[in-house]
Image (cartoon, rainbow, N blue to C red):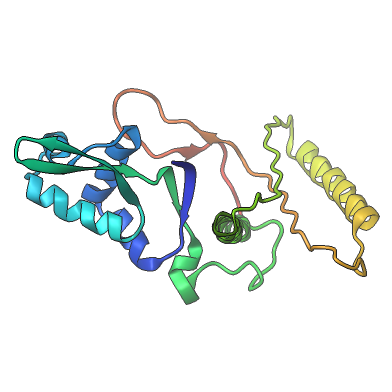
Length: 212
């Protein structure tokens, strides 16, 4: 089982967004189970669960983990193919976000378009690397910083920009034979406040107002 799998096919995305099938996927990330075992957990008849499992299996979201004999019946034990799933913006086709349409470093929506492209591109690379049975060379850096003022934040952005531009100038070799192009994405945004753990499902809210 992979930790994260990117769903690129629109039909598979639609299947995964169905509430019942999403619940079944969540159950199958815990461990293999049959339709009969899942039925009481999700409150549906076994036949209905089996119908949903077949749809999930058709699109590669679940797979056969084994079989077990129960009386005169052989049950198929299914498992999720990943612990979690991300839907690629590529599944939206022509309406997927395009950061080249309106480049604005101070726009939250442009940042969102960049993030969408990152998910799409890395998802495609992961899929290709898995098919070729090769490792994918990537790097990510995640951190937090608390600014005392908007002026400090602006100064940080200016220094960060200068530093990254200097590194790009130092290491970029447009004429390198056999070299491979890489994309560098740097993002800065207010931290999202985690919802209170009071038993109710809440949507996260931004710590501070974001202007575009």
